[in-house]
Image 1 (cartoon, rainbow, N blue to C red):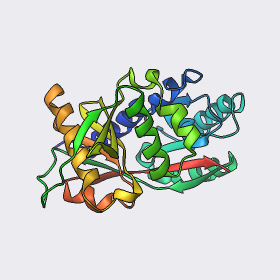
Image 2 (spheres, rainbow, N blue to C red; image 1 turned 30 degrees about the vertical axis):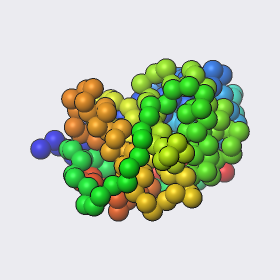
Image 3 (cartoon, helix red, strand yellow; image 1 turned 60 degrees about the horizontal axis):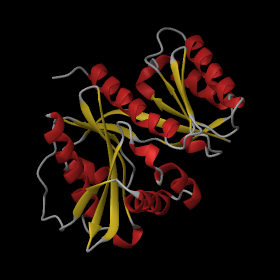
Image 4 (cartoon, one colour; image 1 turned 180 degrees about the vertical axis):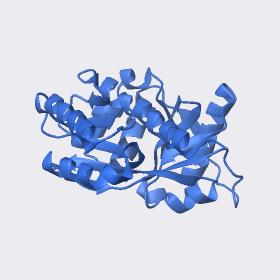
Length: 266
């Protein structure tokens, strides 16, 4: 069995790889490696797409964490007032987490979500029959726009922001692979994947609100993961779960390994 520390480091590294998407997508962003941290600027004045992350565990006192956070805050201050910190809680020693949260608050960030980091050695079979759905890789303007539209609807993101990130060719030239599920030609669900640290990462899984609770999200996710598995030979899958998606992921064989806290500028 893989030690727990190695498991949460795999999840965190996979997420850092996925988040680089936002630094490359618009053509006006950038990705900066800072001492012990990673800063991803999307080029947009939209905090959730301007992302700060730690690059490895904080060893010893909270001073190291404070130094990293100060460098991240200074980086974004020169570019935008809106940014977010995606923190894997296990990167900080339990004895230092309270002080770390205080440091984060003093930096002007507030917690907005606590998604668990989950892993499955392989997906369990479906518990029921899945609906028929055609799953296509994102390629060409029509599917790019569909990915952006469903993202906007499902995650309550301004339509223009979503389109400026997802409905452009350059966004899909890296490791981030998008898929759109269609029913009778109508785009109804999306998912994205990356491969990093020996695991398939699942991101942006969403369904058009008008088509929810019909199994389309599970169907499109399983199809995308199988496509990547056949290409890479990798069975292990990791993700960060929303509250709504948690029961589905448990049924699919995922288990909790760590917890992330997402902070956003006030």
